Amino acid sequence: MMTSEQIDLVRASFKELSLRGDELSEQFFTRLLTKQPMLRAILPRDQWQRTHELMGGLGMIVKGLGKINAIEPMLMEFGARAQRAGVMPQHYGIAREALVDTFRHLSGPQWTAEMEESWSGALNTVSSLVLLGAGRARARAA
Image (cartoon, rainbow, N blue to C red; front, side, top):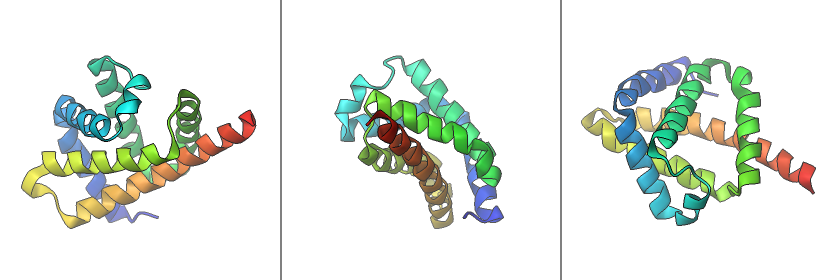
């Protein structure tokens, strides 16, 4: 469970990071696809679409951090869709790492250990719900 201070920190840093959405998206997907090239076949090829989906998803997550139950169904549905598309559970850890690395790089000297802990906590919470949705989709398909 995230504290209100951690949620505020994530929201403030996202406000700054979102001003560089195109750069954030490009760096994130470069990191992700370098570590997991097989995801190229799953992800949209169009960089605008990737950026739009990434920034929209992050915005929804950041907005919903204080009321995670409200976004839980959307996160679980995302996990189910991603599972059907071929995303594997291990990809979420790689994506989380690539995203935090991108945030750290773009934030520069403003990045702190508290920001890293707060973002990691938020992304771990989100990942667990996405993975739950993926697992339920696998179970229904079996």
